[in-house]
Image (tube, rainbow, N blue to C red; front, side, top):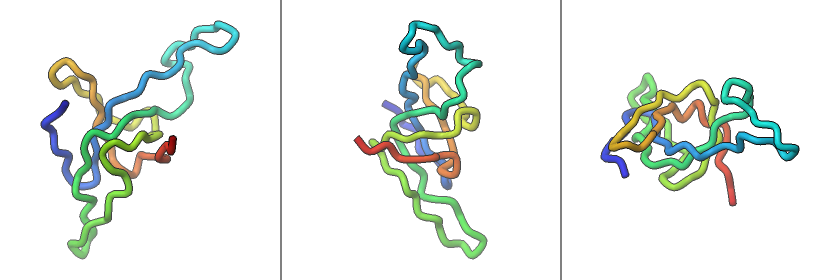
Length: 97
């Protein structure tokens, strides 16, 4: 989908759609949501560079579904598709199916 290669400890994520309606039928606006974002990892960088020149290994891999801090990613549109670029440090968890 994307020809982007993230640098350092960054990753590219395709956002997954969030429920915008509660079980009782109340619609939740984006500004009212306090949950983290969810997405599928499309690409990962080589890892963050430490002061000694070594790399911090990436803990996520392509294809992982992740939870991330909602207000951290930078949003871009590539070939009509919405993608997010965020730091591995902003990933809260990997979702195991």
